[in-house]
Image 1 (cartoon, one colour):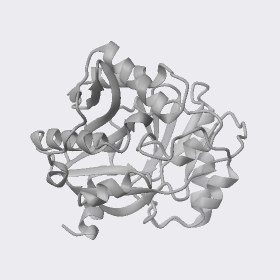
Image 2 (cartoon, rainbow, N blue to C red):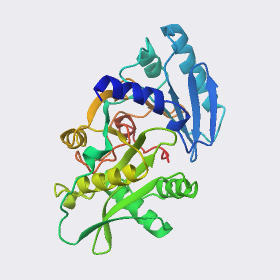
Image 3 (tube, helix red, strand yellow):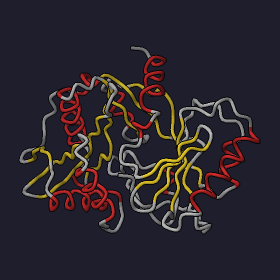
Amino acid sequence: MDTRRYLQAYDDQLRTDAETPSAVEVDRLGPLRLVVFPGGRGFVTYRDLAGAGAKTIAGWVAKALAHYRRRPEITWVEWKTRGHDRAPGLHDALLGHGFVPGEPEAIMIGEASLLDVDVPLPAGVSLHLVTEEADVRAMSAMQDLAFGDAVSERMADALLRRLSLRDGMELWVAEFAGKIVSAGRLEPVSGTEFAGIWGGAVLEQWRGRGIYRALTAARARSALDMGKTLVHSDSTEYSRPILERSGLVEVSTTPPTGGSADVSRRRWPATRERCPLRIGCWDDVPLAVRLATRRPPPRP
């Protein structure tokens, strides 16, 4: 399958309700889907912008934020953009309404079978699934540390809620001497050929030893067992080369002109949070989020 066909499959299969399986509410505004996730997070996405011009798009941006500002529990909104969309005026409209621009991440797609390879692990390291609350909280705490954040319960709570839905999401960890040193999620997308690989994190002292590649291989193998033939991931410039070496291809970027905005109208300086510039950063957190002075509520 070539890049163009991968991109068509991405647009047709993933830019639907399948994109937001843990949403608690979805409203429509023209072609936009205005999503609410648990924990006070809004999320705007769409299949395309229906050929709209800059004036119409600017109006949608204003109305979308007004929609969320009427909800006092919503404190953070992310606008999901893709580099291949026709979206005249969207970038300026987002900036004008307080969104923080982010550096693009690569939308990577490829055959799951390409990632299903044997990767030797360091002595004493093992891979396995976690489902128990204590293990999920330990996994989430490790990811916070790898990301450079204070440990928070918010992501753990979101993951536990998602597990309770029994929608096929899997949490994979690498463990050494009873301690989690790496972790990542597998999210099969119902009704599609796809599974997503998200949340890859490795503690700093364990990087560069093949653990991330082994964790990715384990998730790909599980995806194949579920009947999913394609894998997708939004990848930073640090995880992208690893996936490229395995045969995945970049079909577009996200979010090249979007980002996130605090709907309480606070203005945040554009300063990076502490984040190791390697695989220790979560694969699925847009850099726009990292440019804010605090981390947003997690997307489950």
